[in-house]
Amino acid sequence: MKMQLLSATTAMALFLAFGTVPTALAQNGEPLTKKEAEKLLKQSEQGLKEAQRASKRGEVGQAAEHSVRYAETMDRLNSGLSASNMDNGMNDLEALDVAERVGEATLKHESTLLEVLDRVPDQAKPAIEDALAASQRGHETATEMVLSRGQVNLSEGVLTERGARDAMKKNEALLKHAERAQKRGDNAAVSRSVDQYAENMGSINLAIEQGRIDSSEAVGVLERVDWDTQRHISKLEGLKDDAPEQAMAGIDRSLEESARGHQMATQSLQQRSHAADVITGRRSPGGSFGGFGTRPGTVSGGSPLGGSSMGRSGGQSGGRGR
Image (cartoon, rainbow, N blue to C red):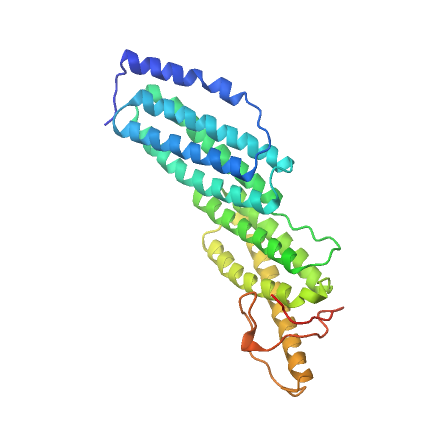
């Protein structure tokens, strides 16, 4: 039940709570490590729980004070993550993991804060609204970090098994962020995420097409691309069902690039397996081959996948040896 009148004690609590805001917001963030960022996120969630409990008990001043503390902690986290995005506080995969957690958490925080906002009287609403704004800034910070750290830059380099794994993890993070942004109604973030995904897949596909793959790890690279693109196509089709108009072109391009990568990886794996069977005498040169789509680290049919030309320039590959 909302309280329409505030006691002198509650009014003083609100005054003291609001008085702490400028000091907190004035703090300049230093680059955070992954552990430090996770600690701040945990603190923000604890403050939010306290605000929710206080609002249910009708303790308006406490609800406002805990909301202010939530906003302070979130702004410290946002500032630190922004600094980390420009510095080497975290590597790309660590930064993406933190951004994913922040993005997921702030989506939940928003609904909780709206619930608190509905319970408190008008005098306490500014504190809750400030907390909502801090939560939105957290979402925006997570978006910028995903888009920045989610870029795949292969240039003219050779694609290794680890490089393929990291590249596809970045694509996974982009798709997850697009899904969360869609739930939040952030059409711009959906569009930017799928656009970056399409660009990443274009770079990966070009490396495969040009044969820029570590010859000793070619099978692992191709299996990774084959498996992950298959999953990503399903996610992209799900996004397309409720996608905003501005994201449709990016989703279509992402689907095309994923399908192209999946096809090239599958065909290259088939060629390598067929060549290996011919070399070992288990198959005639004109023999047929069954389908792929196995999880990275496994080999369909148990056949040893050995060397043969791949793509345009190709390369020799030995056994997996994982």
